[in-house]
Length: 323
View 1 (tube, rainbow, N blue to C red):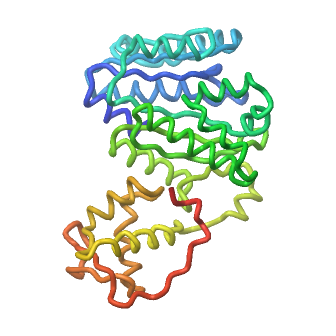
View 2: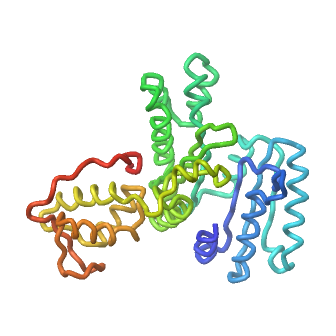
View 3: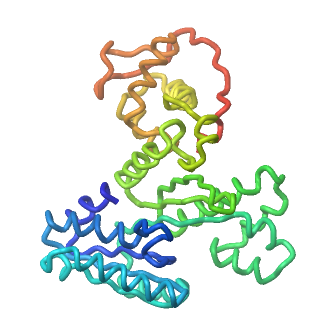
């Protein structure tokens, strides 16, 4: 959010932030919930921009709504009046659908809209095949019935299949670029955070955030409280072997080679990797005699060619790191 707030507020006079499952605004141990965190980040940014914003929060549990109102009032009281008066907070009691959907329609549809959806695949894979009502919910969530092919997928591919179907649904809805991030909830169930945007800058900023959370692979969240898991998964360097392999393949498709800006954009749009990781990957490919660069120094003016006789490469074990 610290990356997004100044971008959005520098470009628009009014922006809107909405949550469909806002919660109580505070956790059991007193940690602030996402509505409070979002409010404070945007409030800090408004000190630099004479703009306004709306915060729309939906919660279906009446007790949480009451606590959320208290927490948001307290967050507002910590801001100067000049900031608080430019931040309208709208807290609604009800199911996010259709109430939030209607509220978003009132706010309008803008090209700069971005979404982050929590997607839990186990429910549909476990219960929807034999339950018409659950399948109808799935049809509504995906906007089509194509997702139902999950029932013919091998068990090991079901979650991945649904994840990619949902990303496709977001693209059909107008979000031309999507990313996913894997998480495990308190019940040890896999969740996906799926992000959608229409802008390459938004895609790049989200990738930066993802690689900060998972500096090894950029796609997974590991619970910092699980010390044993941390010991087993400890990796000090990012795994860029898949990036090197796909960059080499991309370079091989162009007889005249590729420029560094071409490779950076390809990495941004077609892989989980960041444009900032491209130059180091190209340097490693050159050191392995897989590519040649002209000039020798690698920068945005460099053109990268496939080496005359590249060494045989082996497939990476981290296939999940590729789209």
